[in-house]
Image 1 (cartoon, one colour):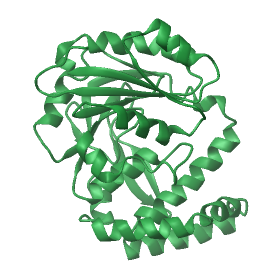
Image 2 (cartoon, helix red, strand yellow):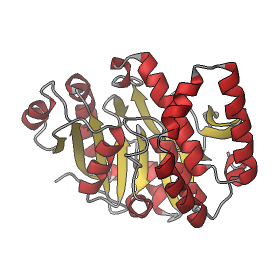
Image 3 (cartoon, helix red, strand yellow):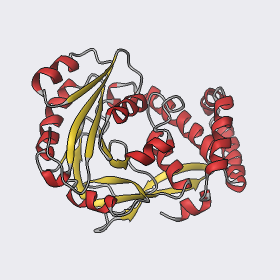
Image 4 (cartoon, one colour):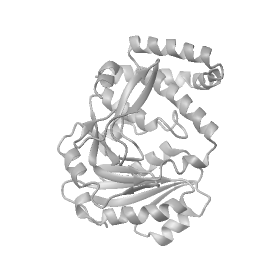
Length: 302
């Protein structure tokens, strides 16, 4: 059993797909951070998402202190994260990509910060060169733009699922990541963050949660054109599900029409997203019913 601080218990969840080489670099750093009791880490969970590179045997042999959850087939990032969170026992859950390396004290101040305010849903870690995220409706499309690297905690549009800490009880109330809609990856962390914000919970970026990363090391193994199509489709799914302001949604429809006219190839992306419309409409009605904060207020808050 790893040591934990009395101020809160933390489970670290690391999703991985064919990432043996990345885990070999990542896990020693995570284990070292777990040995610092002020980080409050009680367990480390690796979720293997159907790897074929020997990751499972490698983790079992090399890191016996790590709890392993395995999928027989590759289900995607959201599913792997949900499996890991479901198996966790901590009051808080840290999500780390297998290409993200935490500092030894990366949770010390963040844990104190999130514990003292029960309305804080999640806090994003600080990778050098990147600050908090600013949300905007730009040409009818929801986008997230880079904020500054402040010296104090700052509200953020979303918390990065590659490096952030989440309050597990609120995660559970929100139903976790939407693994069906945002499969296999992209926009799932924006979605759960946005749903939390619409219900009145807070999201922050914190300068003291220092991590370093080899950005998108897993995604880079996938053809860029396919990744781009998935990203654009999931952006549409996010907007249609979550943008419930009638005024802003009208702006989106106008922007969508302009984009299709200007870039006819985008019609294929839109048609792929439209196939999800029955499910989206059901989820959209839920968001309308449960939301307490307007879209306009969220965009104005970062």
